[in-house]
Structures are given as structure tokens and as C-alpha cells.
Amino acid sequence: MTKIPKNTICLWYHNDAEGAARFYAETFPDSSIGALHRAPGDYPSGKEGDVLTVEFTVLGVACLGLNGGPAFRHSEAFSFQVATEDQAETDRYWNAIVGKGGQESECGWCRDKWGISWQITPIALTRAFTSPDRAAAKRAFDAMLTMRKIDIAAIEAAFHG
Image 1: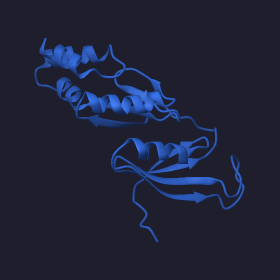
Image 2 (image 1 turned 180 degrees about the horizontal axis):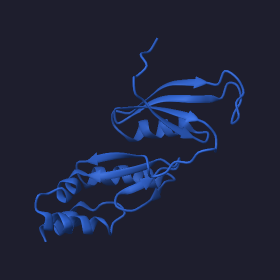
Image 3 (image 1 turned 60 degrees about the vertical axis):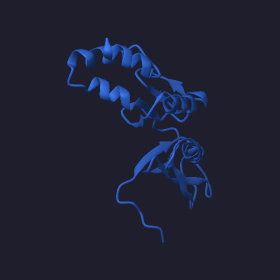
């Protein structure tokens, strides 16, 4: 028997937890799909034998996708925050999420086609707005507030004034 993690993030999907898990496994390193569990009987949003839950890992974080039906929707109150090393990595993740049915939002946030929110956050941005040079940090922060996908060169230019 597989060891069950002590803490797992459970994500509620309308009916495509498996598709979401496959997308995450294909898109992000240290991500994979584990077991699929089928419903032992009919339930309000599905039938016996339907995929009920999917065990998966996203960037090393244990998750469980639950095909729970349309009762609950995702919000920005929960998001995955992905620290990126450079603009190429930022663009790759952003374009994968937004380009495959997702939606852009503000300040480096986007939402995948299943409604899960993602913060694609360059390490350069975090370093800039947490800098002890508060004037430079504010310039970088103000620049970020005008962006959807983060432009590292623009953040660094604002930081340096």
C-alpha cells in the first residue's frame, strides 16, 4: 500500500481532475500523476466507475483532485505561487496556462482553464519589492501594478530608477 501523505492539498474540480493533473505534470518540473480512484457507486455528480479522485504532485506539492461537480468554484483565495528564475521560465509557464484555455489577471496572476489561480512570480520581482531600499522597492512595486505577466526587465529598470 502506498504511504498516504500527512498533508495534501485537495482541489475541487467540476469533472476533469484527471485532465488538470495531466496538464500540470506536463507543464511543471517535479510534477506527476499518481493513482486514479474510481467511484465505488453513483454519487450526486457522477456514476459508479467514474474517476472520483486523482493523486498528483505539482512542483513537489502533494495534491488530490476531486471531481465533486459544479457546487464550488475556485477563487484567488487559493493559488499556486511559482518562483521563476528568468523571463524565459516566466513566459513558458504563463503561456502554458493562459494559452491553453486560461485567463490573464493582474500582477503576475493567471487562472488555468479549470479555475485554479497561479502566481507566476519572478525571483527578481520578489527581491525588488522586498529590498531594504524602500524607494527602489516602491518603484518596482508600482511597475508591477501596471502588469499582467511580469516583465523582469521593466521591473529592474523601475527598481534602478
